[in-house]
Length: 272
Image (cartoon, rainbow, N blue to C red; front, side, top):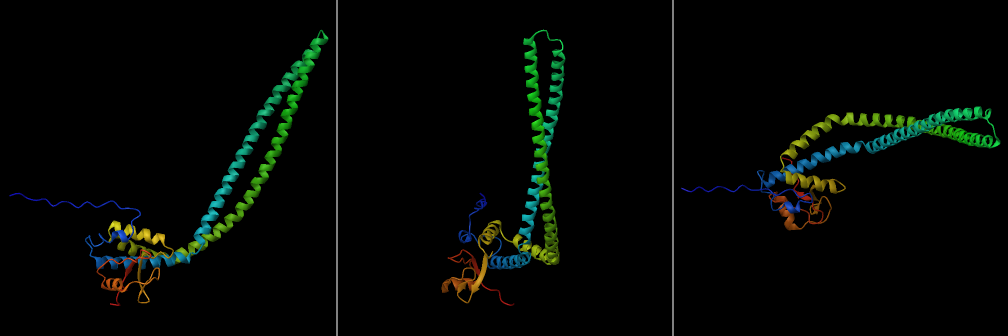
């Protein structure tokens, strides 16, 4: 007797541009029924809303801390750059001092030759060499002086940056302490909410969760799942919902998407 094999269903890859609208055909095609799935999404949105409130308590502090840290890094990078410039100037000075020592040796050698000169032509030639060597020595001395001035300027610049860095460090420490106090005061609550949020997210299929996260990230109020507002409107964009769709929302048996903003509209759970 021939046996028939059931064909294994192949899931299509997740489209990063996928929205709830494109999920309507496959939303109920999972181990979790539509009603339960909608309830999970509603609870997930609630958990995210509470987490958002805790994050909101931190205000602009995280951004301010990040900005101060960036400024501190920039100051340290500037100091490193200036120190490298100073090191290069010092290397140049050392090289020019070595050159001067070499030039002094040449000058001494030519001067000693002047005592043994037998004709004016040779005398003029040696004097010309001495003049050239003297010019080269003066050039090195000038460059050494300019390098020392440049080193002084760069050291002054480093001191200015360090002064700014001291002020930034004080501000950064104060902001970090303030942020730490706020985070510590809400840490336990946030931990419970995050664990609850993760547990709810684990109950959803990857495609639905991906669409939820994407819609939530794309709207200013971070609401991907909303209830009916004022009896006849979407709680996300406040546009009117048709009576037929309101009935579908109330039944909780179907995925209802706002045709204006793309959010899921669900019925408000009963007190029970």
